[in-house]
Length: 214
Ligand SMILES: C[S@@+](CC[C@H](N)C(=O)[O-])C[C@H]1O[C@@H](n2cnc3c(N)ncnc32)[C@H](O)[C@@H]1O
Image: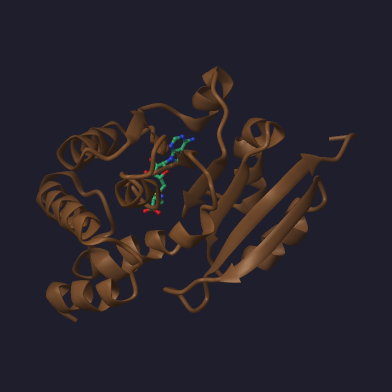
């Protein structure tokens, strides 16, 4: 499939405004430019940026509810966090905190926030350092392709404790990971089939508390 056709097909199912599409075009152009020297996403996915990355991230939009402060762990080139920030630019008070320890990816994310004016703050640091220094609270934690569910819950523990929900984009092993996680956590979660990946699931966590003896 050509990149143009990929864009056209992905846009048919995206719940976004014309202004957002303009910003997403700026984002994708920057990604293609930077990719040549910085290798930000797997080269095999480059011709399908819209379906593999933008649409995959944007499927979280209807699940955001009234979240205003979002923390995206291990953002990489900005998926899903930067897509959410761009699409919700007009929502008062909306902001995504992108936590990414790789310096060149963090620089790219800052450049995208600059050219699109997306409400995104880039934290170029390890998640472990971010969570131990974070003074604010969050309504929602997101992550894609970062770690197993038990590890994601550990990363998110402090934020979940203060009332954050979580949306994790996961692959086919998620049910096994959920079983593993329930050994340590009481979890109220829902598995939602991915719209863009037939084997994928979105894990939507409303509450998660660690068992008292852990
Ligand atoms: C496989 S990539 C996924 C990137 C993006 N979420 C996506 O789905 O395209 C994982 C990213 O998480 C970052 N990462 C991994 N462990 C991290 C940590 N402990 N703290 C901060 N970033 C981390 C890596 O640098 C990498 O960019």
